[in-house]
Amino acid sequence: MIDANYVDLAFPLTGKLLPLDNGYIIYSALSRICPNLHELKNISIHPIAGIPNSNKQLRITKRSRLQIRIPIEEISQIYEFLVEQTFNIGQSQFHLGIPEYKALTSSSTVYSRLVIIRRCIEPQVFLEAAQRQLEGLGIQGNIKLLKKKNGQLQCRQLVMKKKEGTFPIRGYGVEITDLNEFDSIKLQQQGIGGKHKMMCGVFVPSWNSHAETT
Image (cartoon, rainbow, N blue to C red; front, side):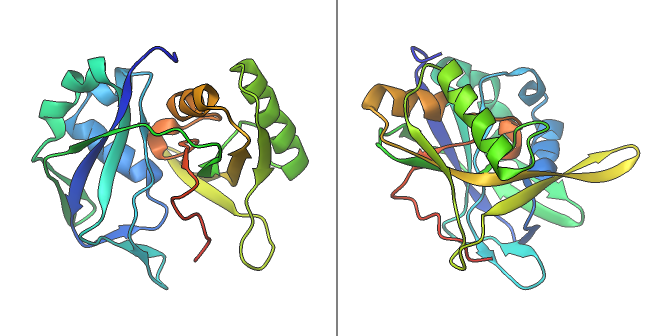
């Protein structure tokens, strides 16, 4: 809810290479060391910044962070499980440092690199569903799908794993403009679409570059 006081916990992340599509595997790995992640309903995990390579991998840098957006009153439920902890993805090991606390900042324009809305694959159907979700939150703003430098839509996928195997869920990069201060913060707190713990539907101010490079 809008009256909850959210922050971004930004844990320094050290390691080498992650798969470029890492939303599901990061959430799964963190859940093994912090079971409370399954139960908490109001948190989101940001995409991890790094350097993509031609092998569909993301190289971790000194600036890479694992950022979790969370109400302040729920921090105690994850902090001790994650701070200065290590986790494994395949044969690779990663380490989380001591996090910084970052307050949410209002911006008239915010974006998310990947929003997933169930059963909404075609662009127009997706846009209409996203607009309905905004209206359901009482947020007024103009929504559009982000494009690559070549003019194509930024269409990405989240690869999920189940006992039957892996399957992709497709979504789009989304930008929302003309937000007032209240709606901007509310949207950053609530997000739209699903899979927020897997780095989807997490909105940040537009001064964070969203240019498509891969």
